[in-house]
Amino acid sequence: MEIDGYNAIIQFDPGIDMFRGEFIGLNGGADFYARDVAGLRKEGAVSLRVFLEMCEEDGVEPRRRYSGRFNLRMPPGLHASVAAAAAAEGKRLNQWIAGTLDASLP
Image (cartoon, rainbow, N blue to C red; front, side, top):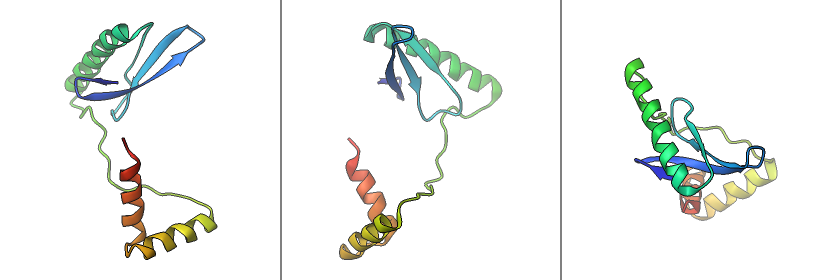
């Protein structure tokens, strides 16, 4: 779900019989609960507004910054197969992985 340009993941919490939304990519936590989509949008907007106000008061950038680097661990056999696939396409391993990840996104 997207609210005011910020993305949230929505899951059902059977313990409370409600949907739980959690904004992702933030420098802190901002979650919200509701029983339906309209409620999620309303409560999400409130939660986001409070979070952004707190960030402004504290002088904190609300969005998490990503360096573009992460470590990936995989079995040696998979590593060999991925390296071979990258070489077959004339790409460096990093290029091939980044392209494959990008292509898998909606």
